[in-house]
Length: 571
Image 1: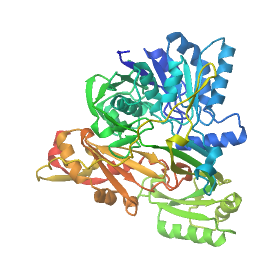
Image 2 (image 1 turned 120 degrees about the vertical axis):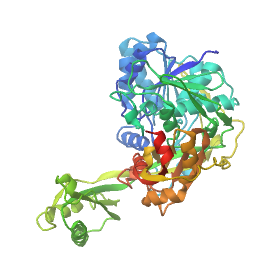
Image 3 (image 1 turned 90 degrees about the vertical axis):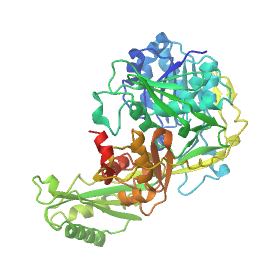
Image 4 (image 1 turned 135 degrees about the horizontal axis):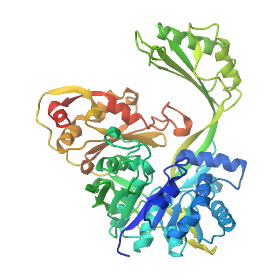
């Protein structure tokens, strides 16, 4: 095949727009439709589902979408590839066959398995305390390719990398070999752009005010070519926009430096070049690929205990004294002190405020303990008992309740040869997928030469976001903050102005943490990795923004000295 393959996406997470599958199938031509339903937190959610019902463990919303759209996809010749199988891809494949029989349809359904390592955690050395509830290796795309080559109309997988559901169709379409690293890397980058759905078409975009219609952004499409180059677009007439900026933002999402490792190839994100080729069309070229690392990443999730919190509203005067009184009363009267007891005072109050809400601060008391009773009514009742005996104006944001389970995430690695990768064909035949013949240990890229700095000149103190965009997200307990600008002169300023020390000054919460800066000149971007800011992962709820989604916007809101010449370019 020589023509570009059109691969659309209809889901970026478990809970995304339910109607998106039908919208993508009816909106225009596609060869493949993919969906990403899995995240580190989702695996824990599915693990708890499986505890209650061993036959579950997959994304049930995908099954609802398939029931609505299976016939439409078959009529249009669109093949579906998704990781919605979660912890039970075989179970989802069987459920799809049941739906198909009920609808009088005969799709060829295949699945990929082998990623689930929970039965082998002792053998593999993953049996930590707390003991993992889920343990899944990130597989690559070749099991998907095998299923598609066998004629599958629908392929469901477990935990493959997010980009693999796009790489698989592209590799099958063009007949790529395992050593076509540049082509595979281009598909990985295209897959990374579209796998989060509408984040590529204007969702969560720093310069969202420049997009005319965000009422209902369309989902993205990657038109991938034989050499791995790709054009990112969307169906005509859908909301949102595809611009160099929206694609740049998504490229920076949840990555580290210039090398982006996948099980089949390490993509050099730092080599990617972006070009607008028309309305809602951005072409990505020149992505270089290298052999993948010899190990696979493993996502370990465990139930660590129980969590609860009470948020006290402190209004008006003496905020600090009111907070001190609450803390003294609570800690002196708890019958048993929880294993973890944290206080955070958010000074959201304004002096001489003209509304009660803007005159108020929030005091959050968070507790964690292995015993649900300690963080349940015993904790919340203590808060309630002081409603008439505490600070003036006492009230809380929500009625206190029982504690809820929380989890912790750990990343591990295992030699790829120790993980089975099995493609189960539509006829039930199981095919073992071999591990890559070559592997290269992942190392940071050499620091590129910085651009020449701007000549000295007058500056004005304004928000960083006046000229810079940002996108932030979570990777286990770490967060990344990608910051980019849109002109060469802005890049000459940003590369020198936004250092690790400057970031720590602007975001004081990062000061005690290890922060690494990665420079990406082709994207006019710097990417910061902040280690440990999210505790033990999103499910541990270590911050009020547990997935670091707003971290980049906080950075953009901080005031810095920006050359007036750059500000004049923006007026």
